[in-house]
Image 1 (cartoon, rainbow, N blue to C red):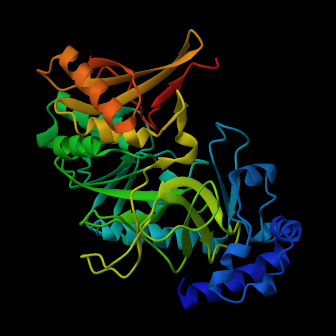
Image 2: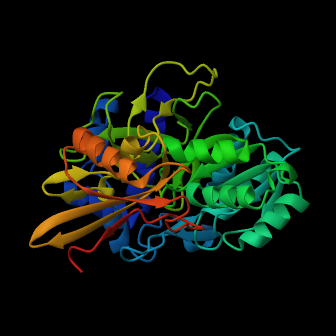
Length: 411
């Protein structure tokens, strides 16, 4: 923790102790006196904030300023419980726009670019965040929103979009449609800023090759601000994050203790300057690590690694813990196998069964690929599974995020 970060942390603690009913009650329950936080090593004394606690505070229990200071709200999807409502002040909106414009600048976007924005608008943070960043940078925003692929392609060609912002799933769908329709010579895309879900190397390579563009990872989550809290640079060796606004930690998800830099664990974020809904030691559930050393790009902002998955993405099959990232890692080593996959879990005669469906590149024999994937998965993960090879495009495509795991065991 830098000295200026600790100064901002102390100011944040005093602010929420005074103005946030949510944190006053949390600190009281934990027996925390904020005056005990005297140096960076005392950070561990501050209790974590969890997604469940934010849900319990629905709708606006985490608000830390008067109503008249709130200019906007955003929300999580609420697909796994009550949605989490995040209120924003003017300063919060401006800070987010600044981070988003920085991300775009790192990706080489300028005021001469035309940015096609395909993520959703409304309560979801992504669409309006990309638009604010593009406009702050002086680029032309094309606010398409999700879906309607015919219209997306028409606008992409007619308006000469040079930058695509999308989930990896939708970027792949667009890339496949452009290839299928023979439109590659008509598009002017140069860059893709991709986020919202983890994606493997094979998927990255397919999008990059089929569209002929540079790709950048962007990261964020609604509870913090939205997308734009970090982005990869042209060297693609981690994501730079904006440490004057955010404090990052990585912890062991089981013990809650900090792990050394370079070791994987769960990312924990503190919003150092946020006003409407400041969060202190928020457990994101995202798995990554903090990277050390200087980046060849010369930026001074620190880096974290790509997101490997989420702690709640893990499924247990026959006593073995499996993350989707492990499947990505297996498939990238199998020649002739494409990026898309689907895991189907069932109970057969009171025993777990796992079927891994994947797609084949043209000219590859299904039986041979099924055998190779099954054998390599057993070697790398330590689990015997069933496999099913499908032709390219045989698995569902999504305009938002792709569902990778179907668990029928408890249906």
